[in-house]
Length: 417
Length: 91
Image 1 (cartoon, each protein chain N blue to C red):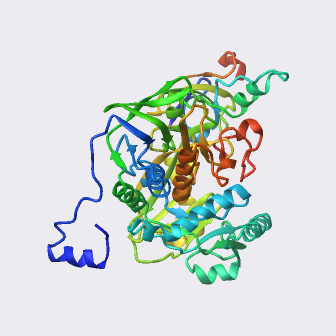
Image 2 (cartoon, helix red, strand yellow; image 1 turned 60 degrees about the horizontal axis):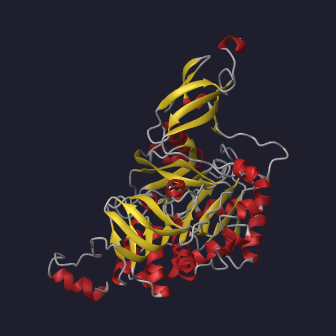
Image 3 (spheres, chains in turn blue, yellow; image 1 turned 180 degrees about the horizontal axis):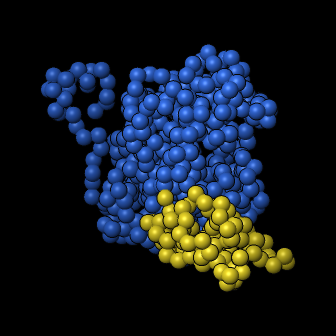
């Protein structure tokens, strides 16, 4: 059923009790052309674009839990493409362009809101770096705008722009087309659209092994039995190392916990995404009214999907240094997700050194915004057996070739990006 | 919060420590092959389970520890000096 004002009106007449399920829950077949491991945004997007762009619909998406229950449901929903290095700029800009048309493409409201992403500058060095990055973005055709302290004070009245602030604000780099999207809707929208094109979505099905015959994948062992497939795509960021190890591959990745939290909901007080690199903090207000914020990693390897209080305290301290008026709010909920922290801070999207096996992962802090382009390019790579020019730079072998994409210039330390 | 047992100071809160990463990495010889260096610099086992890792008691005795910790539960299984030394050496 196409969602529209008419289907809404028709279902209102039956008190919204007869909406069809958004996707089927079929039993897994014994063989597929392509198996995608991971039913988050990236896996579901990969399956959707395989069916839509390449006509490959004999595809299964295997999810060990429920759809979007991993990092898709645990991020801070920020969407942007304000990167300096060319491969990142081109890749994330492709993603942002897909975001702009995604609700229409999927016939599902992903609530993409171009409310702007503002990176604050607190020092002359911050301003130099922001100017340099902003100029690089504009040369790459991406919108960027430098704001003075007075511009920022006018736009965001509750941000402490006074000279007495703990971290005085001297300016900021704004990407007006950046913003937020509804994270759950992204998983549900891709799931529904992929299902409509014939993709089987299998939940509660954990992959326990990858069968490799003569250097090529033959299928996956799962908690629901063996499923044969000539091509397997991994979209399991957080656990990429575990899945790759099933095929005998070591990755340049460590798994770390990243926490986030929300305040209790209040009336609209913040209509832009605000970030500060100096204190590593980012905040936005959800449509429900909660202030959604996050900061750094917990800084030790973890698969636990939960973190510790010192980082929560750090995030709140940063929040109150920038927005003193938020001190009267209460923390409603905190949670943690497991991030693939790659060795250069950039993702890995491409073929792995076992025939028929590919991955999209290594997202560090920033996988959500990449979801559409990650799925699109992963699908292209699976269908064609070779990377698209937009993800060629994100190949796994870039590390041994010395062509790392180190946006932050932090060196090979996975928790420094 | 992790409570990390320091062999010199006893159990102390995580915020006194700085993480040093995977303790199993062995720095290759200067003339080792490029593959050895790629493995050392970039590749990690990243286990889900017991992880051997380095911590420095940076806001305490400043000694380096080798800690075994379960990455699925955060349970600390073992803690010992990173280098062979008796606890008396630090005093």
